[in-house]
Amino acid sequence: MNEFRDGEFQMKRIFAALGAALLITPAAHSAPPASLGDLAWLQGSWEGEGIGGAPALEAYAPAAGGQMVGHFRQMKADGSVMFYELITIVEEGGSLAYRLKHFNPDLTGWEEKDKVPSFPLTARAGDRFDFSGLVYERTGKDSMTATVVIDGDEGKKETLVFRFRRKGN
Image (tube, rainbow, N blue to C red; front, top):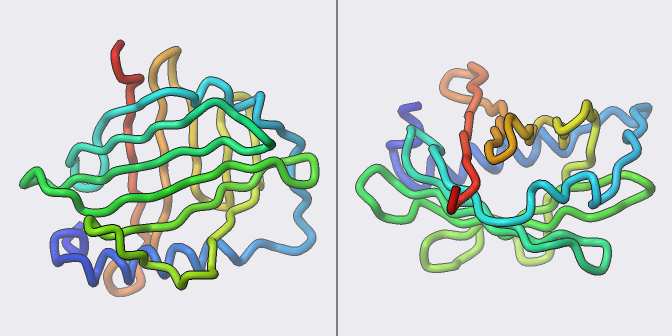
């Protein structure tokens, strides 16, 4: 995980590559049926370990208007903010899509102003939702894991694992 310690530039490069990789979805693949009601367990605040074991926080509001809005904060080991995400999970064509934008600690955006990365739901099994390689899984009543595979150094694949527990429990 050295690329995460090398600074903001490397982080942006990795997540830009992630966005490009996740946007490539086989055209023949049909999205599994799902609704926001299937993700009701996601509502609330979650805290845990993110990149490099540093603290991470993710929170979601109840669904409204066909969307569930959330936000994510990744800290650095020194206690400063690494980056933020603004997230919406939307109902789309009888299934779901995960949309997000990244922001630096000063709220300057990573993606172009009019570009919103969108990751359609490609697989589902119970409380495990795979949004084109970004996987959310409820692992207990008050615990969940988010995983994503990215391109690391020298073209090697790297899996980032975020382990969360419901805040307040």
